[in-house]
Image (cartoon, rainbow, N blue to C red):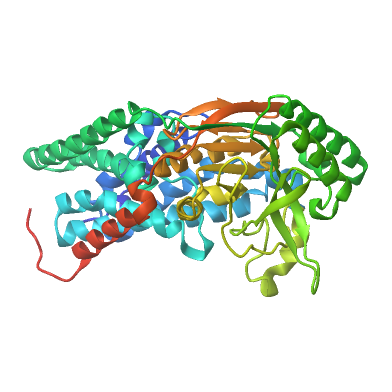
Length: 508
């Protein structure tokens, strides 16, 4: 029987060091460090070990590496827990460690699958299967128990525009596939005989070349001619003051001053951030009248984020977006995908007591479904905060006829950490997937305009108060991803399943 390399003390420390370094290096590929190139090599130690070690060792050590990655990636949550929860530091790291261990488990499961395949099919087949297994794991993590698709490896390339253009065909998962394929090819150079390793390098190099050629061609295509002028507000209201009744007048004055500044730009649409209104907007006739006057005088419609309350029956609260045009509300959307332990508590009958631990835990109701506002200025969808990290949800708005997208969010909970930048980094992929422009209004940042190519054309600094204006193109066509959704994921799942199906052992 093959010995477990992790059973020898010297080897154990070497393995642990390599996996910790790999997990840390992968963290550095994401905002705000943005060393994108590290993502192309960070998984090499994990893959090289997975095809040589027994399955149990492969699972355990890769799980450790994945947990280290997510601990580094999600470190911004410590700021949220320290400032807005009753959990004392350093116990704030316990829920973060639990989430990191859960997400890191998917690294371990991919490694386990590769270890099994290496013994059943051979090392070459195991490495060839790594990209498909990885994509399947990312997709499951984004779906299971409501999903947490944070830190998909494809997002590490959000500003490498030639690489991410493939997302219009495959979604973000295609970008992950390519990055993982390169890692697997490099691992093959370390563990496979030269001829088989060279075959993997040639195949992966051809794939990467095709992706880059496609990307450059798409970047060279002329943009859609039709454009609409938009202004987003970044009021920079600190979270501690956002719902303070004593600060309500000042908060409202800030919004109205910024809105009047925005109106002077003569835009088609003005966008407030998530839950911006310090009152229940639908019931605040005075605020509606003031904004209606601004809208009528400027010709601009206004999207307002607000908490809403049900009119009858049990009291229910919603995270809503209202479209005001002229002197009245002409559209409403209620957030569909709520944040677990942020906007609701899963299994609340059993663990509802956790609401008392942190002020960021609300008790909201999900909306019934996507709503595409018919305009003015043109049909568009609004995704609220966390919803934008779910590719299939944005796809629902685009398939419903949205010609551009608005994202309103409040990332003030995360302070000046990397959290707001990591959140922003997901939206270039949403833009490319559907060739749709995105206007993003964030309370404390990072507000931005994103072109259909995924390029962030304009952004506001974190905690900078002001307005951001630009003219966005309207969507001019339908991408393959818009039409077929996660077809690429299902192809990866099918390919993985075929390799795991009972059959004869294959000698390499």
